[in-house]
Amino acid sequence: MIDLRSDTVTKPTEGMRRAMAGAAVGDDVFGEDPTVNRLEEYVAELLGKEAAIYCPSGTMTNQIGVHVSTGRGDEVLLHEDAHIFNYEAGAPALLSGVQVRPVLGEGGVVAPETLRAAVRPENDHFPRPKLLCLENTHNVAGGRIFPLGEFAAVAAEARSLGLKVHLDGARLFNAAVATGIPAREWCEHAGTVSVCSSKGLGAPVGSLLAGEEETIREARRARKAFGGGMRQAGVIAAASLYAFEHHVERLAEDYERAKRLAAGLGAAGYRVEPPETNIVLVQVEDAGEFLRALAGEGVLATPRSKGAVRLCTHLDVGDEEIDAAVEAVSRLAVHALER
Ligand code: TLP
Image (tube, rainbow, N blue to C red; front, side, top):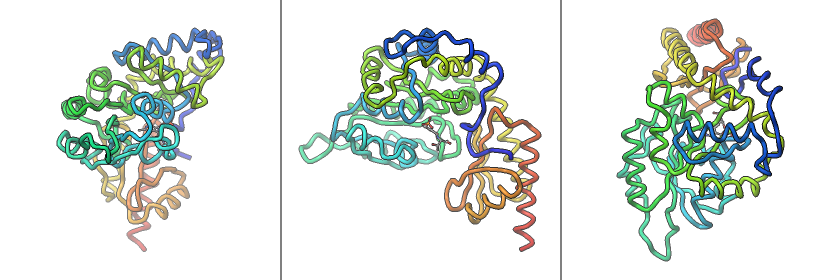
């Protein structure tokens, strides 16, 4: 099977497994795991933040990001296609008691004027807008990069309206490598940033939330309350550290393979958006039917909507697999034409 469902499906590499096996460990709830401490310092530095905290998942780092910047009944503004709004099981309401206000925007981008129009004035009837969440790259938009200038502009607008900014940077390094802009340049405009080592970077588990010292201290309390306090976590943190040290630059290969995949699918007659990073969106008549037929040809992908599917390139697929996937999809195109 060629698994293009997500960049989360990768298996740890030999080097990563060796790093895990040899990791120094301690009790991280006591702050005594040397590998976790090293990872947190490494990522904080990489993102240009004072501190970072290691958590099991991107969902947890996003939700802690929401939690530390809001109170019950507050409002969180985000794009209607945001992961935090659509794929985190209602956690903003469940864990933080906040109301989520989705706004529109092309390709996952929120424009300053859209934000301004959605932010409510102080009034006893209204929820208090407290936080803007942005996503880069944008998953549902097909791995689209939030252009740095537009990111800075909407973040500045948010601050002038009294809102904090959280960045869901699950795939921030994909944007950094594709553009050559260091990740920390987006981070400058956000108070809290969530990054994942378990997407394109290939670690089996682990995300970090970065921000100011005081915010991350508060995040440690939230992590405990959310059930994410781990003990000898160095064993898994070693995989994340290895991923940040060795797998960032290679994300360029995933982007090249996404382009190769998109070109092949385009040549087979499909409507494909030109990928900006490692996600390819393909228009199909019926996503469910298409995916079943594709699985029969040995390729796995996920539905994006009723009429579109998502294919992700990652560490565990090379040029050969990409070419085989293109051939498999082309065979489906032939079937579709013959019917
Ligand atoms: N995304 C997964 C699914 O949940 C959809 C995927 O396969 O793409 N932010 C963004 C932008 C994400 O894409 C994801 C995972 C997360 C946060 C959550 O990370 P985890 O899975 O570690 O909780």
